[in-house]
Image (cartoon, rainbow, N blue to C red; front, side, top):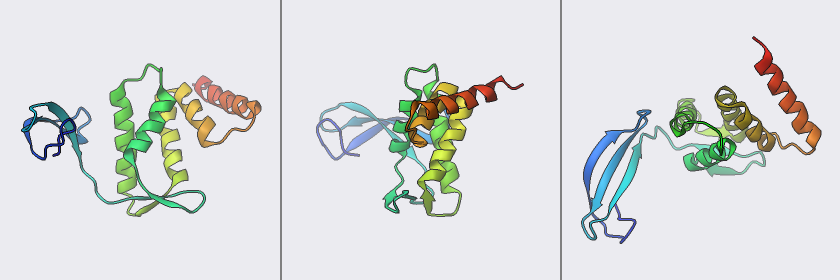
Length: 154
């Protein structure tokens, strides 16, 4: 593993343990060149996924892009980062086990919507405002009203 500080090619693993959700291995490393310490994460990847965008472009699935979009929606909300990590890992696992190497971006968006709906209604509305491409304030108002109706039902 290349050192992020000095670029030295070799590092020594000092500690390994599973992450809280069990979806990755966290490795604490020390550079053999400059002795700096850093952390890496090792995840299982079942297959290479390709995302089919609405304009028919194809791009490789990017877990970090998914994490960033969910993080934007959940910013300044009282949500434990471990729950966000579990949501992202769960979505990625579902996508990898579908058997289809190409996944429509809309399918990923729906999965995120479902996950956020159960996590936090404000984050759900934030994500929906971008995902559903609200063009007017009334679109936002109608959607927010439907969310509050769902939450009001027993």
